[in-house]
Amino acid sequence: MSEILVHTEQGVQTLTINRLDKKNSLTAAMYSTLAQALVQASNDAAVRVVVIQGHESIFSAGNDIGDFLQAPPSTPDAPVFRFLGSLSSFAKPLVAAVCGPAVGIGTTMLLHCDLVYAGDNAAFSLPFVNLGLCPEAASSLLVPQLMGYHRAAEALLLGEPFMAEAALEIGLVNRIVAPTEASALAQAQARKLAAKPLSSLVETKRLMKQGQAAQITAQMGLEAQSFGRMLREPAAREAFGAFMEKRKPDFSKL
Image (spheres, one colour):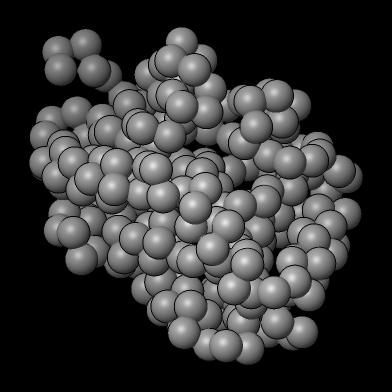
């Protein structure tokens, strides 16, 4: 069975992360599929809205560490960066349904969605520093804008999870519902959008995002450069080695 399910109905294309046995962790192949699906949806007149969802128990545990170490995203054309580029530049409405853990890119991708509906079991985390890395998806720009600097520093420097209520308070999510209701709500809202004039939706989204579009692109480029460099440095090697060996990392000399 495909690890990314793509289904289109009544103008709504739904992308489902479907790798539950691996906590919906994302591989390079899955990023490529997601990027391709967004490009195709962008060019398909029959698609008016895209919904991204996982499972009611987990959205995504972030990168698949084993796959990540085999093919680290060290160049701008790496699948993960292509996915993030397609996501951030997607002109049509993007809706997300998020339940359970949303780790790393599982949280940062939401910064580029227009509507986000969370289950009350949602837990968001940005553990880049804990992996000896830096933020991606322009989150080093967007998270401080969303949260304010001090709460952003707590989220990005400590990397500790914050729950659905906190995400609602800062505006990362639009509404909290029972996990069994999140996908249905996202689909209902997507169908409302799909019934509206697409030209008006696209132009309104463009105007709302125009002021920071260039900043986001530039920040993603800077982050990608730093990310690629830091992947080769001792802190990341220690973090990933500890993860694979199921031990606590030792950064005391790094």
